[in-house]
Length: 267
Image (cartoon, rainbow, N blue to C red; front, side, top):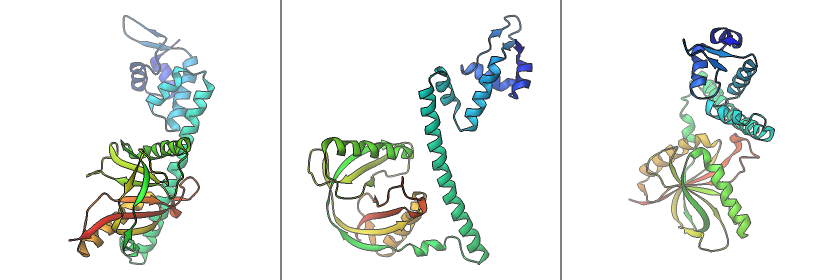
């Protein structure tokens, strides 16, 4: 057996971290001396620490690692977790690629003496009269990162109940303030059939923008819309909504096409 200090040296993990792993049940010593409380580990646990460090490198939380290590021989479950993390990392790469592209553009503009907020001038707002839509909807307070999960559930209903879709998916934002972990969003898809699971999304006068770019930049569109509405003598009368014209699973973020609508009326 290896005392905690020597074990710490060989696995390159501090004794403080090893004691914390013991506390949360992630890695318990094989023996604790009752007289002095000194912890001892065996050499097989060096491999366990290597696994923990590898999973931390992949971005797994200690809570996730603990869950994985409850059933270390369940290869299918382990593979599920790894593929999920792979998907998360690929999405982060997409996000960082968009951020880097934006950063590069801002640097070029600054080198030319152009204000980096000048792009707001390129966002074109128009006023339009929309028609009512019959929508199959799912309204839920959710973490904004779970949007895709709830949209998937809505499409499961569409498949199960054989609804005929007649438009792109949309989301209606009902919250009065931004709370990303408990956001009041109504996810909807226009459908032909009117049932107890559908409702009418009212038509009417809307300020609208057709935006090309990543969803992370939609706050810029909201800024421009609010400025345009105020300067034009309008007021917002209902929850804004977004219509997603492209599939994010098959489209690069810089090519996402989104229609944003703010229901308005003259003051």
